[in-house]
Image (cartoon, rainbow, N blue to C red):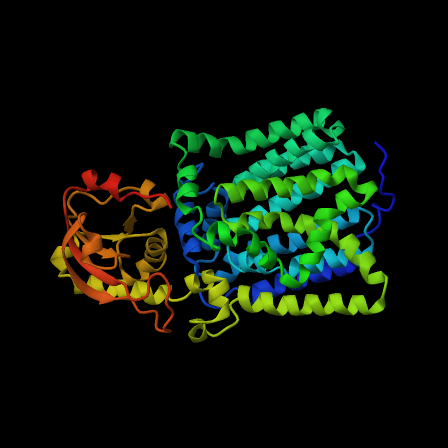
Length: 495
């Protein structure tokens, strides 16, 4: 199939590599400020319990985190390096999408710069997150789909299937994107690429690569769906905040660029074959909104839209020199605002009440964990030595358990237990441990009816006055109100 975009074989601009490298360097330079995020500690713990899946996620990111931590234990720089590289790759792919549509150096640079300045991309890439790799795999899918349509390359369809299969093993959302994109191609076309053997081979590869996680989920009663249902509408203001949040996902100043990419396939006759991209975005927006999904679920599509919108933006700047200056100013201001909100730039003591915490509460989840474990250790040492052998450490959530598992050995703490998500799969305390050092409960009343006769041994204080999830919680010593086998099904929770 001949290409309709005669300049797609032009070289990728060197400035794209400069932008991607600069983004990676900024992410790496800030990676060791603050500390571990609760999810990162959980990933390391999950990776040490290798499996084809977990209640709340596929295995790829936990295994990656475990491997990075095993190579250099305690190194945040190494742990987060793959995320920085994934972000740089996503930025490069946005430029490649612009290039596929005959975008010259200017359009490529606009696509890369907008992606690199994206607040959400920076927020999920300065630490380890499944969303980082979901954004990468979805952008790879988008690039290969555009390439297959514009060039007619069958190999791109095979590669797209492989990308989806691997991407599902990091976060299953890319599988939904691929399914909706396939449906959009069937409805609005072009359908010719789907008739090729390459497309069938790509589909087979996607299914085979994603099968281990799907089978694990099926064998365990699809806990991922339970997690999704329990967390629906818990962030970004629920349905009321869903669409307003899209305006700040990249940057309020750069909304015109991705909106231009969303509308261009309907405004440009030569781009009609790309209408499936816009329809995919619109259909997913409706699905996520109707299902009360998180607003950030759409974030993985923005590099693709920025790649498309870079060409109209490039043409807009060429009509008047002052427009180029306006775009540069918008990019610079977006980078500054995104950096403050998404990156750990403020001193820890200044986080409380800051705009960074208001817009990106995940920053607060990276502060105070070593001190948290020290508090637990001080409470543990208050237990008479003869009673410690009959006492389990139990936490309300995986972040607390992950912190104790990561930092606890240095404090001579035993392994923690929790009924939260993956930790619920890794065993309950032995029957001989009829006492419990309890963390994550507001007070004895909340601990009942599972635990009784509680006394407070310590109180968590992060030392910087940051009101995060653990701040001010008591460390309780309680009796187990029954046997662990009887209580465990009631203590397990997926959220």
